[in-house]
Image (cartoon, rainbow, N blue to C red; front, side, top):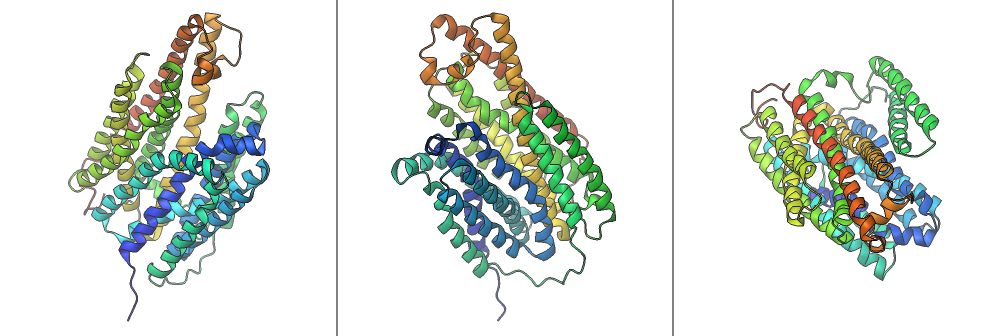
Length: 492
């Protein structure tokens, strides 16, 4: 008797994989002060985060192609195994450099887990059920954002920070076992086409130089480094296009970009993901720096975003049964825009309940946009390109986040620095850092505190205005979509 996939168990395994990769960011963030204190590496702390995102992004499209070429199951197992090895090495690290290298290995594994997991969901479910499953899968992100900080603090305070990494090992091994036993893939016709190694190398160079360029953009005295990296990005991109046109089996088939719907939903994905960085990074700063509240309150204000993300995903899955791509994306982006403009227009003394409401509104729209974008990107390509399309959609979200967190940072620093110089309040170069830390803010006099909060508010307003502008651009692109045919059960 021929074995069949146990859909329920495999789906649960995918949800667990999503949770594990999602919680990695929040749990490490919570533990980072303890880690850098233990390993004495505050000056290179940012690389613990950025190297993980960098290697993740670089390998995502490669894994997507391999998932189409050799199968989802072996690539998911391989990525999870690498993630486990990286996690174990992180836990064993006794200095910052080994930890950073281990995080790079972790990122290499994570680059396979998320996009290939979403591709497996696409294989298991028809379009209507897939939309619901993607909505449920989003629950893992919401739970991770709430549980991560709590779990990180508990682990650090009890058994030590090393275990925030070690805990991934048994979970990862169980995941591999579940996929090995319960996922049965149909036999594939042997692919005799040569793997596009040269195209893969140029693609990784593009992503490496682009993301590193934006990483260094906010650093002082790094102009030549940034110019060199962006020049390498342009040269690598030109060479990549030439190679892909000639490749027998290109790592990213250029013909998918002739699909207007596919291009637009990925542009919207990048812009909305960039907008999200303005919310997640700068709402806590408003809570602490402008309102003088604790760091925990900043996390509390973001909780409705995660909770309503799930509701937005569910709402979009229902819309997709009888609405067009144009309608669903327009409605979803409009909801996000309401939240973004609310933050842009909010005065400095806005009550915390308003932020909770705006967070919930934004989360609803983001959940709807994310699920719609994923489903439409998958539906826009033939089954043979499903892995590539899913991984590309995941990649553009990462690129949007990485670029915009740098751009927002530069914009914010320019505005606050200009306003500080104009006000001539103080010559302390570290004054804004003192303001956003509730402990050091208590030491500032009222003569300094009130005007500094006004300057911080101006910087935040500019960031939120910029973020809202990204959604307006996304809405403009969305209007180029045809207004015919529903997403689900019909060809978009």
